[in-house]
Image (cartoon, rainbow, N blue to C red; front, side, top):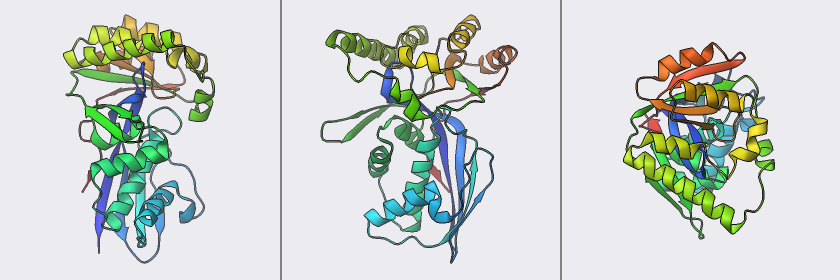
Length: 296
């Protein structure tokens, strides 16, 4: 009887000016415990997971079937116990984690022997952008670009020496709503300035100059000025985190979660200090996950 476990980390995208191209994995996980059997069955072990009526309606099953069908394979039945530490519609990559779970489920059940590049491409095709997918797949901080022929290129940065603090509100924000407020076009001057800010941020992260990286994070021109009004306590959280020593604080993905890069070893202290002044939030001190998708 075939059994295996799949673990996929949460992710945060953009990191400010790295819009749809920079992401990092976080140590909160979606896990699947899988046992092959005659019939399909899903069991949920987390209040973060959405309800479903039939296994064919389950998002992870649908992605697995789509992946298997593309290789002319038939999914065998199995019991899948799903647990999640990733809240839905909060900007922490719950959708990307589920997409990768479905792809890996088909990969294991149908012996597809998919390469990481194929998983990245399949996930990007489904999600529409590679940043969350790449981060959850590879772990760490990953910078991506989709070329004109739809090829996804990626670079995984060396491990960053910092902690992460996230402020997760009780309210949801759908990605579609967050995207609807963005402009459809930028002038050449605006795009050049915004791209330069992003370039300096990545260069600063690579060189370990987290103070410069933090300033660039908070000077995004691509999406934060337009989404800020959708994010509860946007300015308050940025100011409070800065006062506590954070390098920079930005919207996590499409929001409404805010994510701060903070000095190594200071995450727990900053979490405690911010918790006192933010009702209706879950404040968590997290680490950047360096392993990405794992199968045991």
